[in-house]
Length: 475
Image (cartoon, rainbow, N blue to C red; front, side):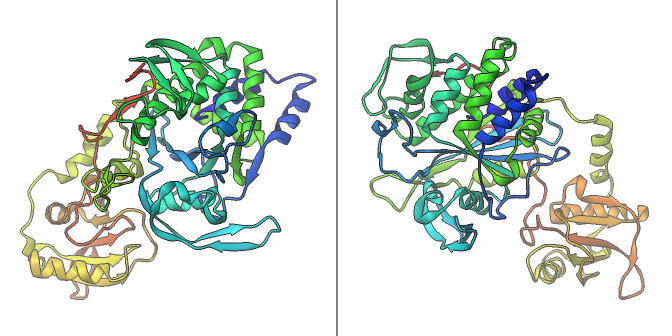
């Protein structure tokens, strides 16, 4: 269910001639869409990084699916992945969100069937999977919950139920998986010996549903299994056996448009084609699967839920927000990076000589004044002043300075924890004393005086991750 658009795109190349238009209209009729209720960005952009929220529900609709778990389920966010595709399309990160993660769900304005709007009340300290299906919550509420949790606003969402796993795997003729041991799980109905197997349909669904027989027997172990499965599906979609088979392309187009629900900004084949073309640029070796770092909920004696690992999770979120790859991909233009990095190299003026005006350009209210106090009282930057609000909000904090203020800029960058990219060579301004000063504009990324604003430049070494090109055997 992750990259079904690859199959759709490949088919669209073939859907030409007399019957092509009519068939595309047929596929358009297959698409089910629901409102994103303003929870997303308004849809992905071709010249920007892309964030797609992929939601697998535990809804038991469809032939034979009532035998899996709670057949009365309203359809919760059982398997959720935030897929981040880099701006340059050289890499992507698929971030799994545990269903049993304790989160705060915000109030969710939600469009009703009659066109009216109803606000579904939020909750604090509840399982993530209740962000969908509970109390009338729709995928837009899961979107809002992800934004609240990670600070990343998804562009679009795609929702798949049990049928999607069955039909998509059958459409490609099966997906190859590897087991490091015999598995016989009566709950998921998976019964396979150790070794490599090609699975599809009911067996594929049993594979992604199993958890008691792998790893530690919990949801986190099942997430790893699902990541292995999706890696294999990705490889199958990108294989020549699939891309050169018109019959498989047609089956994929039918399965994809029938089995998935998308948000209202993705409600046509042309829009899905455009998204598929962007996703199709990826090399599977640079698609990384990882999971939000969590720890057992310390409030529970019997462990059933998890909470964020605050020592690791914020860094993972920062990496995605700052479009940093979890894999080793081709470096950007070295000369440009070296020039930017050089801004931090050289002599630093004493703090007492740093003249700076502090503006609020999107940081929390009061940030300019609190930063000014911190600079003056704790850091010795006494030639600083609060210049109020900036003319416009900025996504990132910047420090603009004239060439002869470079040593002051380096000192302030060192004090503030600014990255080289935050330093903007330009012009000085006249402060209230009538002397030249630099301009520090606190952007939306500002987290408080003394909190470093230098984003991570690589994934932590101890974050568990895998890439889609590697075959991993489930244990």
